[in-house]
Image 1 (tube, rainbow, N blue to C red):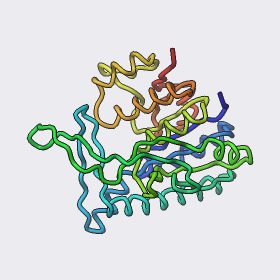
Image 2 (cartoon, one colour):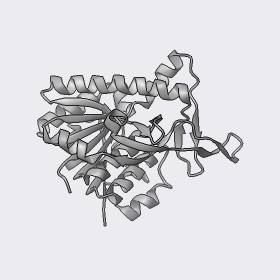
Image 3 (tube, rainbow, N blue to C red):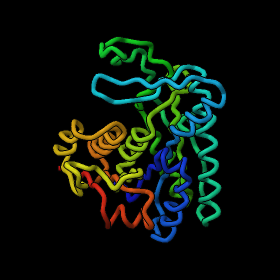
Image 4 (spheres, helix red, strand yellow):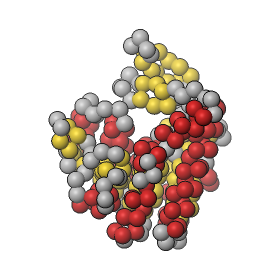
Length: 268
């Protein structure tokens, strides 16, 4: 198991520019070996609308809501993710880190299988199959490349865009991308920052959960949090030590994620 932490900064934090607080606390906490994975769905939606592109979301039979990505959308998605990565790299370097922006297509860092079909629930509540578009399911992460970069004292900032086995650019979920990276590296921890204090069950934050409890909680949490729980579960199953879901908007978000009010998903 490596000592690397994989940190995911969610799209809600990007759009509110609160990622700077996370980065400042990374510096103050002295955390050196980490990889930053970012989202940015809200920004993709904003730019899509500005460009006159309809934004379409679909819901799976399991209740997972996701963006439908056609060829035009994946191009906008890649453009926006590159922009966000550049801003994060700029801020990290201004804080004294040595950061580099990478997407999954750079050096074939993340390879994904294109989803040929999606089973969705339509507006009438019926199941139906649609073309999978340009959405991918992560299959490979080049952990050797990431370890070499981190070993040089450089912080990778990863955008959730993957390379398909047919050489296509694919949209991948940011939480699942972070989970795949944490799994591949057998990371010490996966921290997913969001805009709430953790997994809330019956009005209270569940501070610790076993894998079994996390799987059972999937039926009790809303859209968005379900993906974060799945990411933690998959990271641990893949070899990471623990998954943490924490609030990125508090004063000391990194310190809070490790020592304060948050949800920790632990292996058996």
